[in-house]
Image (cartoon, rainbow over all chains, first blue to last red; front, side, top):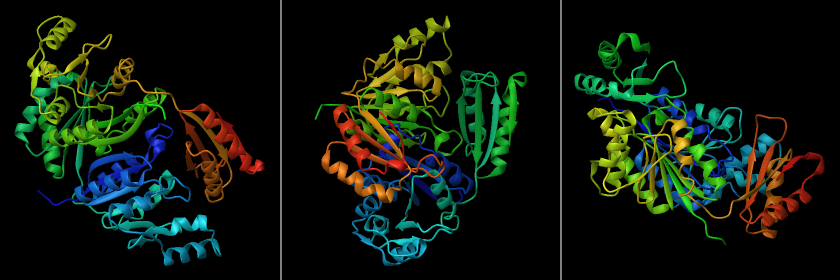
Length: 246
Length: 246
C-alpha cells in the first residue's frame, strides 16, 4: 500500500449549527483534498465556544496528518478561532509584530485596536503569506486556520498547495444502472472477492428516472479501479446499464 | 433560562468525505431543529467504518438529548450504520421479526436474504413506523437512525415530530449593513453589555454589493431579540443601513 496523508476539517460557526448559513467550505475542501490524494477522515462542525473548539481541534490534530479549520477569524466578539487553536495546544494568544506590520503596510498606517485583534494569534505559530491578501494562513503544529467566507477560504486553501500534499490520487470509476441495490449487493460482493483492494460504494437515487443506483469503484491503483469496473459490468444486466464513467 | 433540549448529527458516508456527494441532510436537520427550539450542538461526518462511527455515536449520545444519524442503512456491503449503533451500545444485531413481517407484507411475500439485511437491527431497539414506508426509524437510547437519501431523510425526520421536541423557539432578527466589521465590533459589544442574554453573530459577505455584514440577534425571549436589535439600529450609521428583518 502506498503512503498517503490524511486530513480533518473543523468548521467553526453557530451560523452553520443554527441553519442560518449552509456551509460550502467542507465540501470544497473534500473535493480539493481528493484531487491531491489526501484522505479526509472527519468533518466536525462546532460552536463558537473556545473550550469546545479547542477539544475538537486537539482530537483532530491527533487523528490526522493535517487539520483545516474554517471560520471565526474576524474582528468581532464571536471570532474566537485563534483563541481556540491556542487553547488546544496550551499556548497564549499575542499580537504578532510581523503580522501587525503587514496589516499596517497593507492599510497604509496605524490600525485600530479592533482591527489589530486579527493580529492576535497563538504564540508561537507560523504565518503563511497568501498572495494579494494581508490576512495569512496561521499554522500551529498541523493545524491550518482559514476564514469562513467561502471566497477567502477557497483562495487561501489554494495557497496551501505546496504544503498539504498527499500520495497517489484515487482513480474513480462510476457505473450507473437501473438495477436495484438488492440485486446489486451480491454482485458487488463478488467483485470485492475478486478485487479485495477496491473500494466500492453504492448510492441509490430516488429523484431521477435516469438510473436507480450509482456504484463507485475506487483505488489508488488505476488498474484495480478499471479491472473491478470491468468485473462489475460483466455481471450487470446490459439492458439496465445506463453508463460507465471512468 | 428556560429548559431546552440539544441535538447532535452524525453523517455516515465515505461519499461525503471524498466529495463525491455534497451532503444536504445536516443543513435540513439544522433548520428543522431550529424551528422546534432544539439546539444543534455538533455535526460529525464519519466514514463507513463500524468502530469509527460507533465511537462518534457514543460520544454524541453522551453530549446531547437527541442524536440523529444519516446514511448507511441500505442492503449493500457499505451499509453498516445499524451495526455501528449496535456496537456503540454494546448490543448485538439481529433480524427483527416484526420488521421482517412488515417488509414481507409490504412487498407481498418472502424476501431475499439480501433485502432482509435491512431488517437486521440492534437488539433491543425501538421501531418507529413512518406512514407510507416500510422502512422505520430505528431508535436505540437517544439515537435515531435515518437513511442518507435526502428525500427519505426529510420525510422520516418529519415523522419524528412528536418525539424530538425542544423548548421555546429562538427569535431571530437580522440587520444588514454596509458598515465594515471593524466598525461594528465595538457597537456589538455595547449592545451585548446592555443585553447580556442576546446571542449576536456577525457575518461578512464579499460576493454581494448589497451589504457588507449581516448581524443576527437571537434569543428565546422575543422581547430581548427585538430590544437588542433596536439598540443596535440606534448605533448604526443610517445611511449605511440596508435593512432589518424581524
